[in-house]
Length: 308
Image 1 (cartoon, one colour):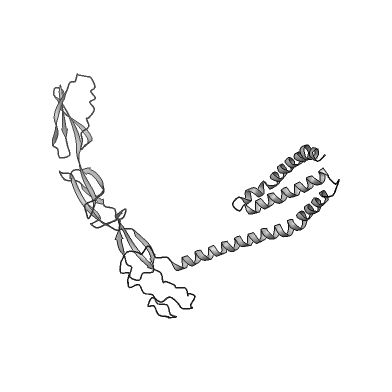
Image 2 (cartoon, rainbow, N blue to C red):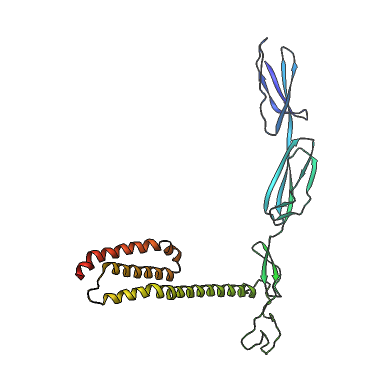
């Protein structure tokens, strides 16, 4: 039988030798085993036919780890490289991790030693910036919930009141703008502040909407009064007058009158239903046709017999 020896790159046996059995003129294939922290390189045959030796050679592998931590000790991550014992290494830390900026050195180099190395790399937290608008001249930068708040100062504007005077915080009748914010010494943003320009724009939009609505109502009124009243309603009144005359009943005339009244009712309902006017207008013709059919049936099957 023979022996198997395991050597690392220091020419040191790092594992207990193993034995193997062999026979003359018979090929022997013994796979090399795997060991943690060792990378196989090659095999070597020694000894003689009576006492063969098989030497497996490995590289002893070492590690260098960069641990990324914040100034307060918060773990941010890590990177690890692996190399052969005794050889040199180079590793670099990222310049930033999220909202953290590198505070320590960025490049590290050395020799893989007998022990695995751990290097702590320190990062400084740089909070994200949130800008806020304020008319408070005393407002400043402050930090809250991990953010940096930076003010953007907006010059206040004051509208004249009915007495013709402008805003004056001193209580006197002054025509000059006088801004006094002496009661506000806080560095926090005043959430109650409202931008006057935004308020004025909102009021103008509301006024325009009201004007458009009023114009629509006037248009509807003109349509009902001018078109319907002068043409359709006049025709209906003339037809109703004919019904008052003795012996003047006509189912055709009654249907015409009924159809006109239905058209006016549906049109008026469409005009007054602002929220669903577009939907009613689409189905307006169908609604009128359906009501006309119902009215014609009532005239032919009920009113005609009753009047007779």
